[in-house]
Image 1: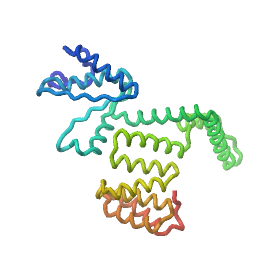
Image 2: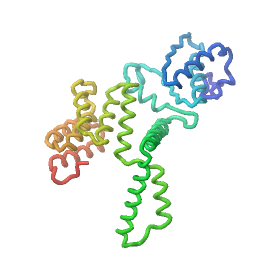
Image 3: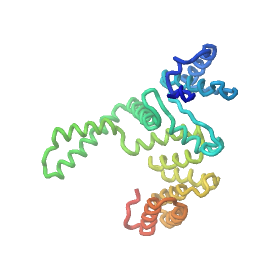
Image 4: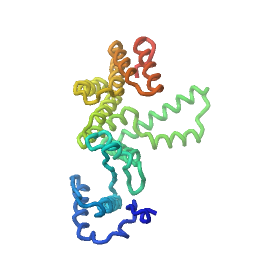
Length: 283
């Protein structure tokens, strides 16, 4: 159908490629550089109908076969302007694909990265997995006691084992790993939104003061004007630090910028908790 419409298909391009043999060695060499941890940049220039899109998708297909992830973004003055880096980044994550996962493959790629970090952590500290397993066993035994001494069933044990395979690291460890990923992402593709998310991850990993320092820097740079999540995150970190009066002020600011009723309800609830700090949990 794509050929009938005169557009470039998304796959099978090597069966249609003609005259690209002279470019293939250079493209493969660049992929080899990237596979070794380097970087490469190519600009393709040509008239309308010169098969620029075909060449870039041909390269993406070769990259996918070698285990890379690939993304295609169409730059547009109205929908994806090049100077709007947050929008470009969002389009990249939306279109990211691998040989195993079609768009959007961002979540599977991130999950795989986290699991690799977990494996590295266990390799560094072989007792980590056993300690986590013991903690989970004690948690299940606690449920057994609350149930009046009825022993956990084999099915419960099996279900726990499946959960253990998917959640080998505790919540704080996971957020430390996510924070490390955002550190690398900030080096690769710096943007205010990445910094905001990095601040949240650092705070969730147990360092709300460090996360707040990043938020304060973003606020001073005025790189996210009228963005309701900036004062909302700032308020939440202040609340976690038991600075309730300051938190309430930023919750009010976020309320004034919120775009949806659900966001306003959430912020209103947090504001109430900050104004009555004796009752809510500050987690």
